[in-house]
Image (tube, rainbow, N blue to C red; front, side):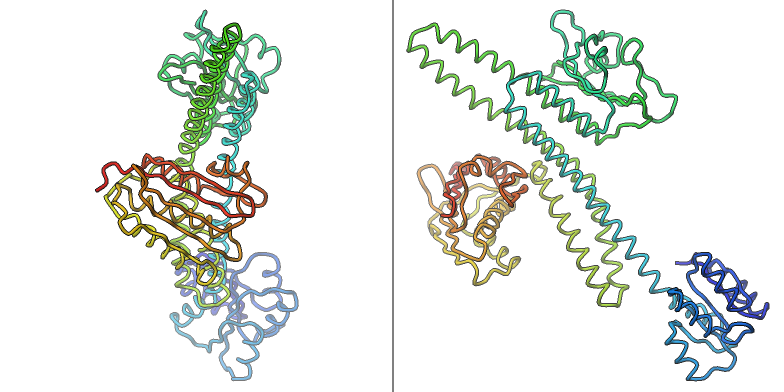
Length: 565
């Protein structure tokens, strides 16, 4: 790693010239010179210097005095001392003052280059460590930002399911779109069923005049082009002179418009603009806005369902008691179907975002891990090795989160095989105990049916789901307890029952335990149980939860015996 600045201090011009022209500059080092220690002090205090090569004896101030003065001023620049006549006492004094090497003149070029490389090793390693630490910090920041975006999207999804006021939901979606893309303004327009034009339904940052009067023709506007083609448009933000017409007398410097689709039909456009700042939008902003557009479509469908439901209820109130009962049953069925639809759409949107986030940061995480392994082979100090081990642990945790996002998005290939579930559970428990060192903390009580029929499952995915339930039990039991895992065949189902003696769950927690990033009290459940839920659903199974606060929790997995032997 050449390119460092080396200060050569020697009262002889020929010595400085020799080091400059034959030793240092041919090997890529930057060289500055000083005829004595006083001038060297001035240079070191005035500019960055990576290494000092100084003669021992010089007029006005010699090499040892130079090192003493630098130490008094708190300067710890590596140094190499040279002399024609050395002694053991002088060498000891030089090393006590912080010199990295002590060379007797005349010296060979290779000898000096070796001393220079050795003297700079520590500072080079320190710089590499600092650079790597900064890279880890940046990756962590990126990951935290993406996770925060997912949580924000999840919150918007909950708003869509809980708010019946369509205008309120649409305005909240526009506010979220502006926040997530860091745009100056945003809008949501719907295709008017009568005129076919786009009509503004929600806006932020556009001013009341524009918000009240904004109607756009489908055939003569950028948003209209999105409706016609069904494709998003992202332009501008690269030059100060960029100018794009939104409507008459209203221009912006950058815009991002995405379609709102109901099946294959475009029903509206969600848009964000930068009117003043020359700042472009990115593919990440596009992905976020597409997810928000899906939420807006769900909100509109939701409003229609509620409108239809209200109409049904009004008609039912005018009918007999028998008709009221029928409407009540239908209302319940519609609510259940609506909740299933909204949850499916919400998980699909989160999975789509999770896949994009994971792929975006997977490569930098791999590069940082490779850099840590390479640096580990070059470091000798215990303190630095400990720091590298700590950094690697953090990066492996980041990698585990990325894998969780990929699993949640359903990107892994589903490969079912006819297997014995008892063996899958035993293998998962063995790996779990090895990884967590819990011998003596948890009393594991297996209750496996020895004649359990084989069942068609993906071994890797099922083992992962079982491991996540084990980890939940381990965390809920704190200082220790009992975990019972039972397998049995009941009718057309294969059942796996997990029962722990942990702290249990409240009724509210049970309702949301499979929601991604669900937080209760001081505990955040992340994606583990959400992935477990998705894995069981992929196997056409179900998972149930029973729990009382302070009395443990029971998870029951039901898997169909179809295609089993």
